[in-house]
Length: 105
Image (cartoon, rainbow, N blue to C red; front, side, top):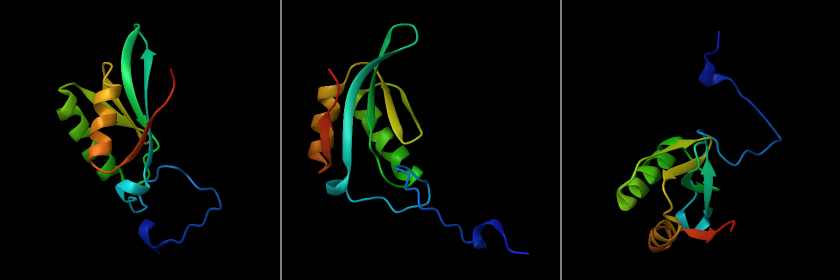
């Protein structure tokens, strides 16, 4: 019997985030940085649009948390940082060669 990893799976649907595909180079990433409010009227900075492996997403999130000196998390291809750090995150991502834009208001 074939193991889970030996099975061939095919899908015509393309997902923006998958833990199995290769990570795009920073210049090919199209990241969006926005500020939003979550439960309890708290502000978070959200980074979306990451395409690549989960390990690379977690590594980028760790770098951003260190740059902003704040807490945060990752889920479903998004990075959430506690607080309003849109400008700081944009500057850092652009300095690392990512294509990043401010999104929202």
